[in-house]
Image 1 (cartoon, one colour):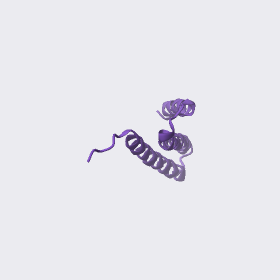
Image 2 (cartoon, one colour):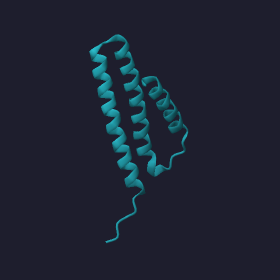
Image 3 (tube, helix red, strand yellow):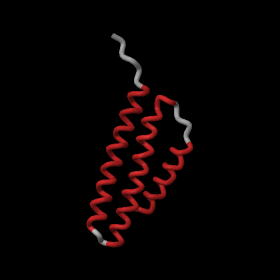
Image 4 (cartoon, helix red, strand yellow):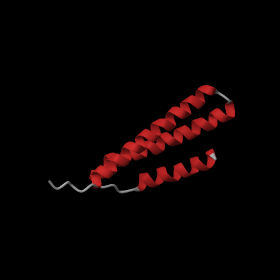
Length: 89
């Protein structure tokens, strides 16, 4: 499972790196790229923890995964805000 996830994340990281991003979405794109990179770190660290049995590595992987999810959530909020139509008052 972790190997497959690492492969998919690598594809997503490569795709994000190749995108031409409009200026208004660059901050969200940067957050999304960071989220994917941190998720890659989480998966790599979790694999190391599974092989070595080191509990600290498992905790580090969990922290990286949580950070990735926070960045992903923030990127989604920023993208939604960037494309939201202005409110009419």
